[in-house]
Length: 534
Image (cartoon, rainbow, N blue to C red; front, top):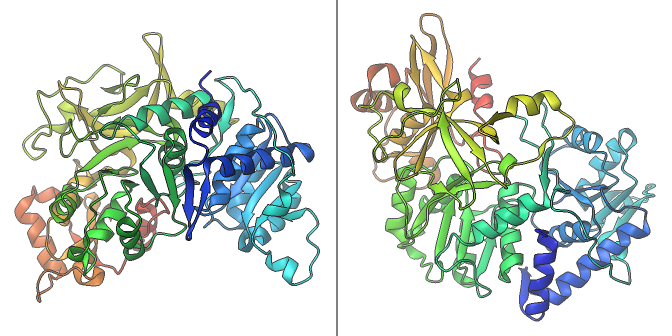
């Protein structure tokens, strides 16, 4: 059986006294953590919540998230993780669509759950902290504080089949209503084991993994939290991203493994005192969630002497499909498929696009139309499907060669050594005057400019060309990382791009901004930039 909970139970049996979770100056041993998870599982059963029932987890990165996650799986339930930045309206769809019977929420977020509870099947609300409504003396029937919720006894692990659903995260909903993604026990167990083999020597019980990635997102949940619990390492949850605080923690707690998104690494290299830090214990760093600019990669490596590897994955693939390793990588590539995962680049008729000899290629000289196509994935990590959405499932998959291939929506190419390269998201491509422009290429160039700390490129309406290229730029001075006393102007940025790109690719508009709108997982919300321009 490929049940992740069973694997963690084996870790607990092997090293009960080792630290499992370290937070705010305290540690929980594996035995203590596992006991609390068992008491949470029993508490669910005591309230009639069991096999196949959904439990929403509406928390930042806290030890209680880990307890609720494994406690729900021990009870045979299904986790519905929810972004703690979401408001009542946003969680209403997730709770209503999933049919969740219980929610574990931060105290400050309990009012959001109460506001929508009448439109959902939620029967039980578990509060982490003192709820504002309780302090005010309001009626809070059905709300129980976390420690009071735990049962006195522990529940054994409920056997669940490999193809039973374990987690139901929701897509970000940037292009429409969020969709529930059905991930099985085998999906999560496979990904956790495969990804734990990526660092040199694999994850070790001596490793300390920093939890900068939010646990509501599959990247932080599956790769970091599950990876730590599976391998016997220590997980250090970080509730909120703060670059200086995290950099202090990397030093003080001798963190050995860090997974993060490009925006986090970019924040780190742009700190005014970045040169004062030494991450001597850090043995592996990985970037995922969105494309990693080469400039960020190289500056990080030059500054701290730690190799920064890029990987790739999606919520629907639980999440990792590709990885570079310390021993085998190519800058600019998302890496090779994990062992057991198959991937290929296909044209619209699903025929394989020919490989290039070796990447990365010079995108200015190559005919991208000849070598690029959509990245599709097949493997034990791919979701069962979207919850209750047969039409969406039909669009998401193609049966070919006796295999079920998932359409990622990412455009890229591959080489003869099985390294893959993502050019951009299909939906982000800009068509200007009949020419295709991939924003990532322009963004890579912008990151090379010494006066640019962050950048995003979008297509905006243009009467003559249909669309034109617009760049939103965060000046280095705004991030505290300016390299000179003279700061470039928008006209300077346009001229710089014109000198280094084909004329049709250069931004006709450049707007300086203080920050870029990003999701909690670091992805630029380009739809907001387009909306602001209209």
